[in-house]
Image 1 (spheres, rainbow, N blue to C red):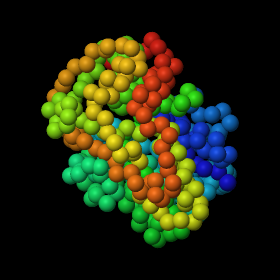
Image 2: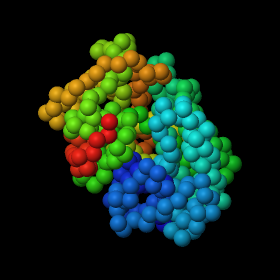
Image 3: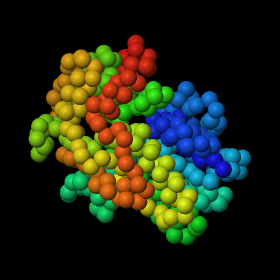
Image 4: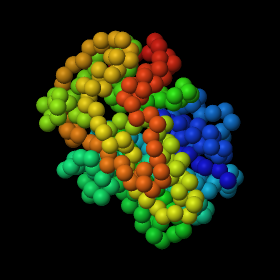
Length: 330
């Protein structure tokens, strides 16, 4: 049996591939390489360049590789872009996920793990936010992920499919062994952008909003190391394969750091006092977003191993240094 990883040439997906290999799993990757990179897919792993919405292609992969589980990362993730191009996000994240789910059901794939997001909560009224908080997305990105969760819920009620929908908070860091990391030059992740500023690839870092009701006035987020995140996926897969019930769970540490705290951590790790410019708030940014993360621990026995901001930052910075040092991204 094999695990099909969609988006396996991307940031989180490539880490998932290595996690699966370390547990002796056979893996096949499906990625259209629109934002992914061949170089981060291990050479022994088959890479199929194609679209997750191509049901015939998915059926062919499932049959050829005897796929018993799909871990679905492929999709578009930039919130501001989703506001400008909502139909593109609904196509890429929702319509194509519907095709992937349909292909899985038709082929009899029993296990499905979905890369969801804390954006389904929108602007939560309380922190930490638990899985029982209502859906209230404020962007097409969040809505597109919410709709896929709903499709999985309804499909699992009608067909022999079990699933886990894991709602990520702020994914950060890079593989501790240096094999992969966040490789997209214009990614919007704070730690990556700050690392680029530290390395001189950006002229400065913008901090959006300093008047939030937080200790230092900047937004607070729950940063989860990507290696801990894919470890949660591995445990979720074991849970589903053991015949246990479908579930939804947050993935975060249950504590947050402000934007300025992250900036200081990057300055410490790099030894560079790069320019920081204070800017106006961006529309739709919650003051704080922190995971209520007890469910994932209780259900699958997840215990994070990299829950240290300085470690997260140091490994993200190390990966950034491995990329082309001369490229200018801003």
